[in-house]
Image (cartoon, rainbow, N blue to C red; front, side):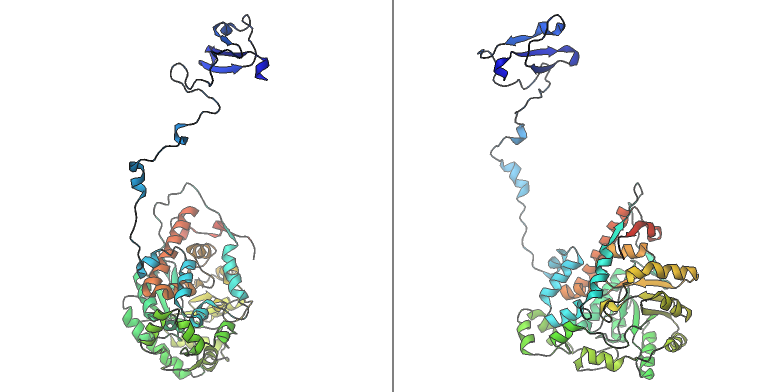
Length: 476
């Protein structure tokens, strides 16, 4: 207890003139400095109630209980409040709404609010229990980036070359069917946004705009055409000729659709082409009047491959696709098509090698977005083995990857593991449903910003600097 001792305060010259509190009297003979002490007995009215705030010379005293000026309460001044009171007028425009989206997932939320359930689920869903889609997205989460430090990343260049021509970004738009059903601008929005971004756009055989109209809508864009080979080869040949005449430089043949996958969301929703006006759809429309207004006041859905069709999606696919396709048909395509030929739907190393041996200029590692065979191989997991095999064969075929991409970081991870290019389907369709062409442009902007930031934080400024050392797979 301090009452049982004498408190001694003295100036320690050897320590720079600092005060210290002691609970016993120092020996004057062994400590000469003690001669300068001023002894204060307990209970002495001269005893200070608090330690001094400053020392001689203006040095602050290190004392317990002293409240800094910044922590003392005061009445705020108007000059302090004025910079904080910057009220903005509320903005409700489509452009303002899209600017608020910082991720593809946020665009998805917007899309779900603005699109009837059947077309939204057609985009968002996958086959059977949707295990493949979940695994594909999880694959991109189960990685660890390994950044390098002290690199000059003041400028990040995302430019690349794919299939003989430049692309401003290492991502293009994948083929999607029935696109104007998602939002009335459909393929026109996708092709125009892609052209403005300097990336390729792929029109699907099941697209709801003709080859010629898409080419006219984006005359300065790089257009590719995706082909499903029909049982009627003459009609397939007609499409190929139209694509070439319209200026498409790449033909993408899809080979993982011998039959339609079991897309159970579509079955439960009674999804038809065109959407049927049932009691359920009418009730659904009451929450999305803008979608129905646009749908009903624009041209009815037409296709790149046929003028009209009425029925379920599965019936349409099964009536068109040829389950008898073999590598002989790929040889026929290679002889017929004079541009670049890529094969979409590769899911094994062996098939990757075989299609390249049969003349493909590129392969697309894809499980159709999980919409065909559930529990199919995950393209991102397959990527290292495929690139290693093609490198061993001294092949210069392009390796393109899709399925599961929801951020620019996903794209950078794929490129680091050996992909030459990537394609997005759902990611751009969420933007389309959220806001038409402006929404697609916003999706591309989000991905580009993600890629630039990820590259800079990895310590690389060009895509050519990416390598497998930048990514570690935590599990496969």
